[in-house]
Image 1: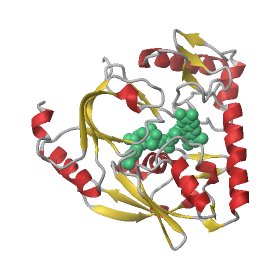
Image 2 (image 1 turned 135 degrees about the vertical axis):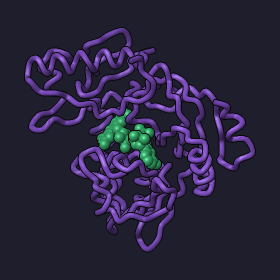
Image 3 (image 1 turned 30 degrees about the horizontal axis):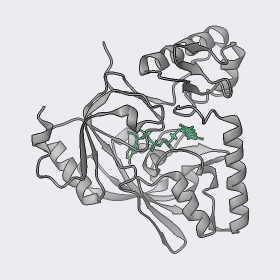
Length: 302
Ligand SMILES: Cc1cc2nc3c(=O)[nH]c(=O)nc-3n(C[C@H](O)[C@H](O)[C@H](O)COP(=O)(O)OP(=O)(O)OC[C@H]3O[C@@H](n4cnc5c(N)ncnc54)[C@H](O)[C@@H]3O)c2cc1C
């Protein structure tokens, strides 16, 4: 495909060809995608999507790549990355209006600056607003569902619409975004007036919990598996004697068994080897099927 020609003379933002996805995932893993585009305005996003539609191209949106495991063979698609270039955050009547590429940490800090409480739970999740809405990200008893008032999206017919949060079907690590192939442009976040010092104290407490319990010193995509009903994935893995289980540079974290980490120069196939091994052992011992929370994407051999 002659992508250079297809996107020539089009106002769509920064365009990178054959871009290694390992530069765009927190796992630091992934072969090249055909094209990676970083738009910075809604108009550029729509220009790009119109051209993609005209030429019938495959595409995918990513945020900060903190929930992605990308194949070593890369992705034969146009990747649209909203992280950093499309990340404006503003305040209107005590509500936060943010573009999809803003990180949850930036939004949490913005909320703190304006003494707004309710977003503390999200401060340490290393994703963007777009990824967090898509995944209904959550931690420490909070989830995106609790704080979203509405979500601004582009639908399949390229209409820009505002959807009330209660119509987003936000559920455990999923939402309507995936079901319908929507593109999250941004959201309105509704919080309550609070006390600056209390908000800061709670945020610091959660940061401490995270840094003491999670292997943040290694590249990963967070919890590798979804929480199986009635169990904790990390405990099941630990009870199988798999704490620290290693295959080449892919490893079950010693610090938190729910995380598979890149302990050096791991590639996707090594991480998948550990994931499969863990799933098989847990199923053999407990009859529980662990499902990956991490989204495994890209080209794989048949
Ligand atoms: C150390 C660590 C700790 C973590 N802790 C937590 C935690 O406590 N709780 C939790 O829920 N998660 C956690 N995660 C996982 C991850 O941070 C979240 O799932 C986050 O919401 C993903 O956001 P992202 O921007 O990185 O999305 P990506 O990983 O880039 O994408 C995730 C999915 O969302 C889609 N997507 C992204 N942006 C858009 C958009 N604008 N429009 C449409 N679709 C889009 C992608 O196509 C993909 O399917 C953790 C990850 C790490 C590395």
